[in-house]
Length: 531
Image (cartoon, rainbow, N blue to C red; front, side):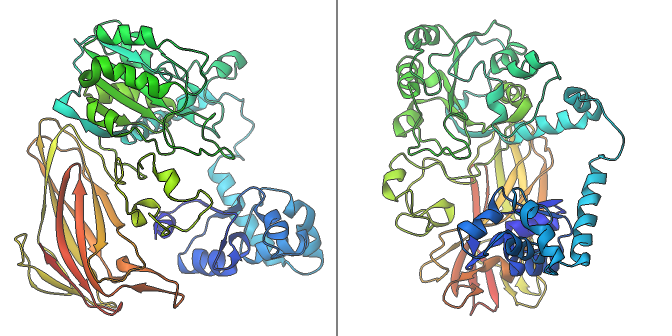
């Protein structure tokens, strides 16, 4: 479903992956790429393979005997571009032997030429000045800032330690406080000028110390304390001394490309190197005034002690070229955080509960928020705000409805499989004290006796409000359809909705409202009742 919605939102390109789906490697699957992606979903963009994926169909999956056959199969599946050498080695031969037609080649050419025109590749020779290009476009910088701001997730804010006051004496500690390139993660291009010295140092990327110094009235004192993973730097004692003198400690911890990268997986989720020692030492002298800022891609396990003792926790992921400025805006209250966790933050014991080689999502304690049976440190979709928010169900509109009310037990709606969807309204109110926006997440959870392939919960809708002043409200509407309850049934090889009762929850910040839904026979009707 998420892939389909991306396509329907006019994604320009799709990449087929290394794995097989339903016994067929994805990059040569006519059913997946041609029938489903292009014909059923209406995708008209370009289709590219992951690098080496066609080679894998020969040497790994054993689905094609050679480059010629793999090329023909991929073109039949409407693949346009091969990242790798298979097309180079086998496509011409497949064409000459009649395995690939002129019309197939021409269709690919049209799709590729269209995206090249959109990129301006035929607009004439351009001087290589990436930073100048960004400045000329202008909106790219604005978009980068907005993405960085929306990617910051507030996980804890005890006693409203955040936002900081510009009059407070803030010290910064941690391996990422002087970081620049780290916020770009990997697979990034040149972001500074063509000057090799500046590009190598990433001097055009602002560091967190620089960004906070522009807002704070006091000079920011800072020390790394330690590196991300190497143990050759130990300034923990100096960091502890700094923390003691401060009004607030911004402790930036996490990972970088030396710890997580393509071809580089972690075997544990705790902080590497001396970072755990640094964290404990700072909490021992400044726990309630410590703001932990996590820079990471994969999950990090902080442990219950650090979570309980710290004053505040932020997850920033890798925020891009505006990451530091975005962090400063959030810390000093120039932006009210709206971010939600895009993955589950597991406890450190998780890696020992399921073998890393086990790919089954529902095996044992389970993987992802859909199947995980344990207690996460922070749940998928979690994210607080500097404001308090209220949610309430508004009137519902459906194919048949005996009554509509936000009061408990007063609303009963029926959805038939081939009838229009039910519209659920969620009224979102900003209770203050700051203006801001919120994203409402809509989950369903099977209740006792409901069979839905062991799925514990599923996100089936989300929507954000505009920026609301204190006291302002906005109604968000969600279309609830029969297909929202469908999951893949391995016994029948079809999509099917499990029969039984579900709980539907709307979640925003730390506020949750719920209603119940009954799904009958996987065909409809669906009866929905406000709890």
